[in-house]
Length: 314
Length: 314
Image 1 (tube, rainbow over the protein chains, first blue to last red):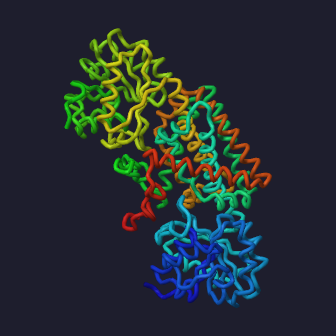
Image 2 (image 1 turned 180 degrees about the horizontal axis):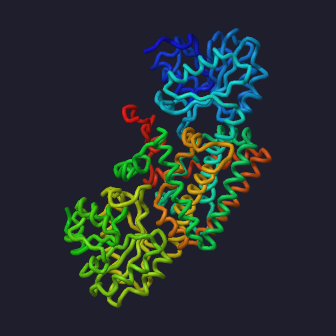
Image 3 (image 1 turned 135 degrees about the vertical axis):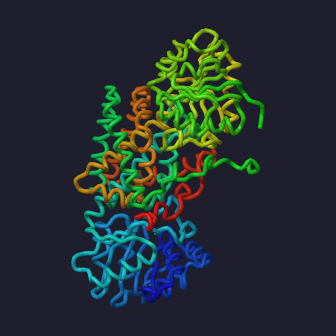
């Protein structure tokens, strides 16, 4: 175990990301004290049961008071309110960071509230599962994934380095880019994929010709893959789409244009166009596996026959 | 091990599905003799090395001659050609079946070639992985998945029962429906999901604002899930879209309509509409897990940090 990177860490919000941070920080000894906060009393109580922190609070200012590093892990629509709430409690030299999936909006919401002498280093760990809440977190969530930092030109370089060392300590790779570029990259790699997954699950649920029971039973033909990300936290994702509107609409327009071209190829029987696309897309998956971001095992390594109901439980 | 269901089984085509059948049939003793066929000499040679059959042929008629059950596992566009080729070799009382993902077109292509006294029972196991070829198969592929039979009104009931027992022997559940209904169900549960997965991978590969390297590195935000089914066999999928055109275009129109409504909600900031959809879609995944068609483990049970390149291999 290495030396702690910060003395006192405050985790504002203790859902999937916050509670994964709590676990890995404890496991790797990245902080001497972990202050855990949630605005819901039942979540604070659960975090306490799970032993995620060293102190607990429902008021974000109480958790942030005296912290060296404050990480805000709340739906992005709540970023401004949280920044405003913690501002008076922040000590000089403290670093405020976050984990939001949108960065320009978070900067716009939070930056005005950050006091002089406090460093603001927006961040986004590109990692997650479809589960949420303090029970869903695990220490390995960030291992080998990327955390993107989007510091502003005026951000203190030492603070950026501290946040970088913190995420590397959590097992992540770190890269820096502008908030605007981040939001464009995530629109295509995360936001639009979530939107079309939510959308097809919605479409399938409202057909006259095919029952919901049929959709569920015969989902192994591909549909079930989409239901995983369409089971992600609704509040978090509502906020992502509302707060990354322009980039999402631009990428969605590209997607729809391309889909219309495919539709036309199907209508007119252009097999060569289909075959050509279907061949090129294989290379991208190969690249993702080689980039260390995906398992090579077929079917994501799902156990064959996975999900067989326990006969004794019926 | 139970008694064999058929004496002589012919597998026409020995890719992912054919070779999985060969393995489970051997493992469960479902046939006394397995005749393996592929039109490619190198695939026949590989099947022989893997010991998948008891006899090997490159001419489909040679494999089908004297068989009690012939299962055609080729891209659906080749169904008619194969049926024509095997027809003269089929013995009276033989059963011909297939595994195609489209059923009306396969019936239209194959039925005219089936000789009098031979029974035709179209079938479709809803199972697969993104890998293809004789090495990709495994005996557990059909376990707890559904095989859909689409017999015609005049089909011999005893033949349907034999094919049902065969698939149950392979570990599958079996349900019967009309070819037309099958094609509508699969359009939404399999074909449109594949199309939009291929499409978004194509879109992401051709952006000016985001590089391919960024798409790959930051794909854990959701995109990588889509690349799995977009890595499926191009020939098979080209044929599916060309041969299930009408149902795919109808379901695609529904998908696009719904996506336009979501796009509008994002543009106008209608958070309630987004939240409402995102909440309802969770229930569908829950239903799929309860239907025994999906693992409950987060992230498909992927190993955390999965895909980390072996440092020694760099």
